[in-house]
Length: 630
Image (cartoon, rainbow, N blue to C red; front, side):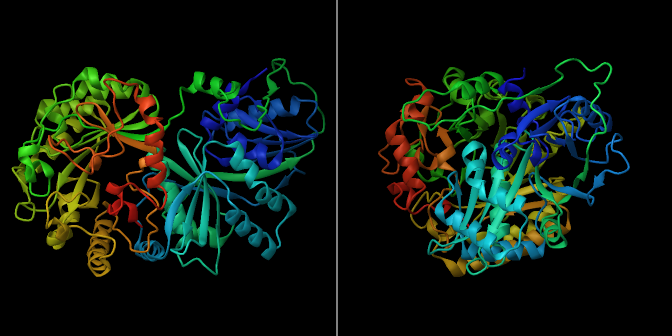
């Protein structure tokens, strides 16, 4: 008899939503069973077989073998097969639905076209996005209004009415809500993230009387961001269904992923097949759920899942300050403006190893803080420890330390992203990065690309991390051409968030500076269009005065920062290595002295995170532009 471990493996390998067992069981109440490498759901004598084999969803032989097993089960009185094609066992009289197909987006998705960019920009001006686990009365009211206004089939109505059951049953689904500045719900989307490779755009609802054009796109963009943070490689957007829905998905660049055909018939006989092992198709018992009580220990299901798949990933990212040393003298960096107070130090490998319990609880480790990470001789050992813990690993470098040996080491390390810092697109516009020769950084990128080619490797992906300074706005227009010259596929543009000295506010973009932000948005939109024309990825975000300020782009609820001396903080901006008092400093413990998980769970650290996500953040967070990103 198969246990919950097999149940979890089905969902972990899901590529279509019907393989997400918690979803189907919650909305349909049917019992999951395995038939070879395909999952099916039995309700009474009716079986729905999901004919996409878990090891290869397009394996026609695997689907046919699963159908044979299902037909051999005496309790199956009627069978419906959904899969990439008509099963060969279906008689000529079988009912066949209209052919459709799942549409999917790669993660990260293609750069949005002009129409989508305009819609997203407008929606971000009118609404802010929040991430919720709970299904609130406002969500239920919007679903009820949708049901009242449309003549839907009983089956569809049942699915929508059971959404609360689904959300309660699936620990990996998430609601992205778009709200107007006055708090009214404009739209929300539900995403499922249980699969290791594929995220699912499950449902989306919008209030036509409140939502501006693009609100549904705004909610979808939030789900895509979450999938990227979790390391998933595609998002299944569901079936085409109708021209309007297909148009919505095509606007995002969605492409056909898997064909879909539904075939139903009543088997003529239930003779057991030769060679079919007794018990090859068995019930997968659903775990019983009871209301949680404070202080309860994890139940059998949670414990077993942890044994099989490892502990659940508590965090999206740990940013580790490998070193606070740097050869650069960037004008906007506190290391330059407060050199007399700066503490230069490397993290030792023993301190990094103290993170081991937390590494198993995070999806990504980013090896970079206030210094140049490649200066630390233990850099590659740290990357290896994080990789062995199952983490994706990335880094950001100024490029000055790059030589052929380090480039080859980066490729061999398994690091998936190496970003290179810029604040201009030629030597003159990049002069704020004093001590960091522009041409030398470009050469470093070339060396890393050559090392990838020599090893026949696809990773690390090479990105440009571009800091947009308001006084240097026009320089960003050269970024697409620079990417083409360096054969770099993507760039991420950020703004100055940490004001290192009085007067530097002029180079930042603060939420109330609407005219200044609008001017930058126009330039960035034009630059994004040029990048798209050249086939390059280009991502930027600017603060929005209309944003509610109840979130954190650093994702403080699911990330943390560890300084080179092992001090644990919510983010890099509240743990600057000064040997002087700093009123913005927030440190909750040292991993050299305490278990990092125990530090994370401290009540005072939890209160800090809760306040960041509410309307009363701690003092250092109140004016941070990252709380107001659209």
